[in-house]
Length: 464
Image: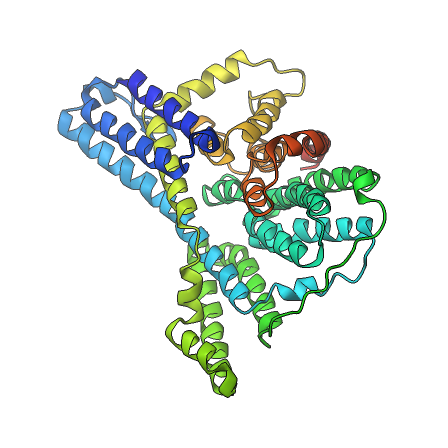
């Protein structure tokens, strides 16, 4: 039965990886895989020799001798435990996504567009690189990519030029997301799972992540694609909300407040995110009502539409629910393997079998080579299941350098292929970037950034 569960997981994993070839959204195999894995566990409960207690992070003693009722009760408790941990991540993401959509409702991100005052390609490249690096750390790399490419589309007329910028934005956004607990889904998973703390994460990864962004950007600035000036496309702007910049700063401030709330109260991050969402929503509703009252006769139709759709309702309707369901499926499927002790056993064999190369992680038997391979793997396979698997595989304590290397490798390694990260996939969709064009033009830059950043991490970890 254990072999059948692993087979289901592998098939489901392949279906997720080959999403673009199969033309089936990855959330479908993730949900099916999760349900079948847990169904097989329930049906074959009496045949399993081991059971992994996730709360204590150890195998349950004498599980094979338990009565069927005890095994069933333990399975239900474990399922509930994993659902709770997964729900923490999903509720957190829902809150963050809603705040970002509320900012967009008031056209708050147009404020960023006003920063672009130059026509020189290299200056715009560095400006967008820094914006992607900082924004992705605050609002997450996926959202930062969407925002910046949307701004690019408004100011750069030539698509052939624009896709070069988009490629470097992907690298910068993924690098920026790695050093912040709220910058990338995988880093958020590690943070909520109490594997990394905010202070140590920034201390370990800020310099490696910055180099991962800056080195490819520096190399790119010497390439022919970024020589000369841009032809700026003048677009007649729609009437902006006068509260746009206020909502931008309020929303970003509310998201940044979440780690502070967690440190002060020691409550899970999703509680702080819900508080932040509530505060932002209050101001959104007040500003929206204010907009109705000052609307003139010509804006009557718009006011009527807004009256039926509050900013919060409108923002919630734009949430990426397929992504939320995908995370639910993949995290619960990985939890099934973890519960049987499969990942635990795999981690032990990995520690014994991999060469140490003389650069062994302190306090850990896992070599740097494994972490570098994790980064390459996250380019080929989705980084969410890779990190979810590592959570079940390794039992190192909180803030062990292993977890920070996992955060860096999974976050930045995905830049090496356009399908390797959420930022890459969304850019691919928005700009119709060809897989092989990216592989030829951008992947080598991303690989250099990843290797330079990894080398920098090996130095910075010795300082802690």
